Picture (cartoon, rainbow, N blue to C red):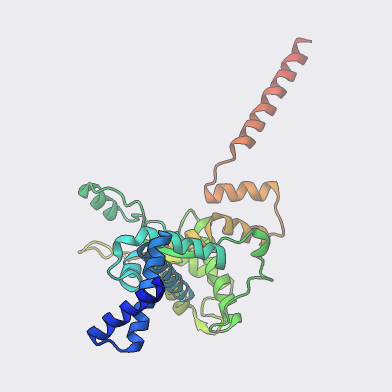
Length: 312
């Protein structure tokens, strides 16, 4: 009998001795061959399983981020650990990096961390100084932003969502962009009375599309586009409370100063030197260094020419 048949007969005899049925005997031989092949190839099976598990968690994080962004809900670090990672919370950085890679390659998006909410009132600033606590590096909340080139971000390509309707969504985007621009152009703080005057001029003091203006403003607060701050007078004083509006964290990341500049230029039909100067003053933008240096050089050369003429 050949050696190979002798070994097979020996295995069959052992299986019969242990009472294994023929199908389990065949599986046993196959598993034995697989384990031999794996050990011969030197492949790390555990490493492969870990990589597949990380990939699945990254895809789960992508789905979670997309669902949150669809409803404009901040994607919080605690929510990721609870709803996506589970007992794998320590692998947050690794899974987050894999999800970022998938978002950029497949979806043309990336997760951007929202800025920390600033201390606005004097009382909040005093409490922060008393606590002597270190400032937070990040807010722990993220939103999805586009990574597509500027040429692919036009309204003809990226159209409004159809929920509830495309017209309502487009109106909402235009309205919160306009209100945020008002706040930014007023130094980052806008009184409630002034905002109401702006809305009256726009004929938007009662309704925005099919929704009440107050409901739209509350939705903007909930989505993080604006912050409404109410300062109540101290006890024992009859002063009226003051209401001011500030730019929210989502607006800072989603719209930004560039969005305000683009809106104003579009409304004025282009750019001009006078308009750009007014925008820089209103938004507190410093003049570019190169422009200042060119201006200084022009003044210096003009002075030199003037001095030369006087000497002549």
